[in-house]
Length: 121
View (cartoon, rainbow, N blue to C red):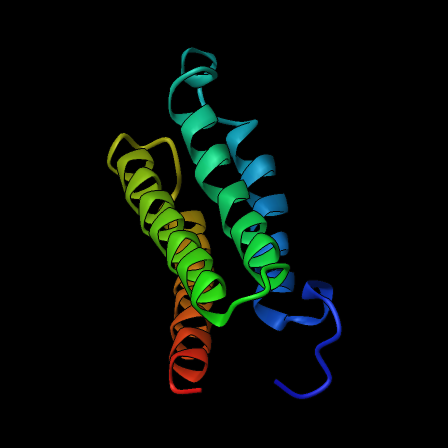
């Protein structure tokens, strides 16, 4: 994995952190009645992505690392589903939904690639 000394060096972690920031800004604009509903769930699943990448990185075994990356991927699928629900409810414009969805797909591809690399070691 090249010059990766800490999880901070992982591009996928950096992109996941950017996504968290954007998600927090977006969820502030959701209807107030969603504060403890969708907003909370979206934030939780989103925060789970970089958190699991970091936690997996800190593990001493490749199998553990892969497992945490798979959990991060699962959280990403959860996030994508919750965003689609927001889009269906017209809480998000198509433009914002598409932008965030594409960011999440990029992270998904990067996670899959990292999982494949680690699994073949």
